[in-house]
Amino acid sequence: MSHSTGPVADATDNWVDRRAPASARPYLRLARLDRPIGSWLLLMPCWWSVGLAGMAQDQSPSGWHILLFLIGAFTMRGAGCTWNDLVDRDLDGRVERTRSRPIPSGQVTVRGATVFMLVQAAIGLLVLLQFNRFTVLCGLASLLVVAVYPFMKRVTYWPQIFLGFAFSWGALMGWPAAFGRLDWPALILYAGSISWVIGYDTIYAHQDREDDLLIGIKSTALLFGQRTRPMLALFYAIAVILIGIAGFMAGGGWVFGIGLLGFAVHLGWQVVRLNIDDSAHCLMLFRANRDAGLILFAAMLIQASL
Image 1 (cartoon, rainbow, N blue to C red):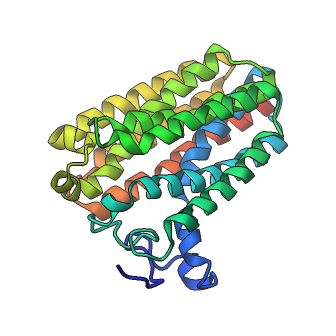
Image 2: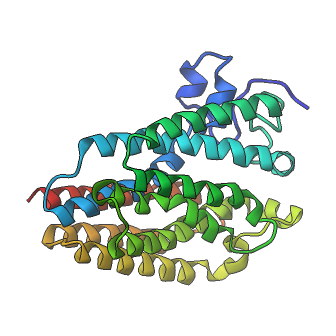
Image 3: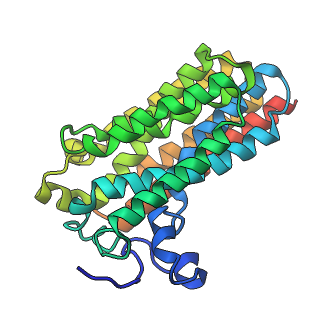
């Protein structure tokens, strides 16, 4: 087993490689701070839910809540990725793109990764405790989904649904942070976000298609195969419709409508451009979803402040 501190194969020439102290690099990579796109994608449903509540209250949402969700998303995504890498350490060692990750490459021990995960989770808990009791309970409930997710790709071709459950959980957090309860707009937003996650993670999974097939890992990329484009169009369309229903139920007006249209156009562009046989292209489209999410959130913020 290699004990080098070299970069991870699919995340090179980033700030961790260039500027972070050598001793910290394996842990920063374990938390995926060398490639924060996943943290942004985890954050988007949180911010959408905050924006939804702001539109319902007809006032700008709490800046404190926006900041807390930013810190919480980056911290808990790091904890979740560390857990995922602990569970997948043997599988990751057999996949070209992931064998250089900190645990399978020997840069971080299982014990070290476990302690690091618990520290990140403790910081996440500290952030969570700043919210009201109902929101705290909602946040704690997410841990079950996060714990189960890494095992799903071993048993079902739909692990992306379970990732959707986990990565969309923030849609159930921003609304109760404002109201102390869950209402239909937040629940419908959650369903729409799950559909969005299934879409973009199917694009992501096409990078590992050949390796996954060899080692018996399942994904919607393998399930859909050459039918990925129409299936992606379907899940993205469901996402736009449900998120639109949630937004208009919460009092969204013409500004929200323009933002929703921008979001829909962005997703449509991804469907049209998709090339499942080009890994670099799949990664680019996957990453572009942060911008799609920010377009929608910006519209919510503007709508709420009108």
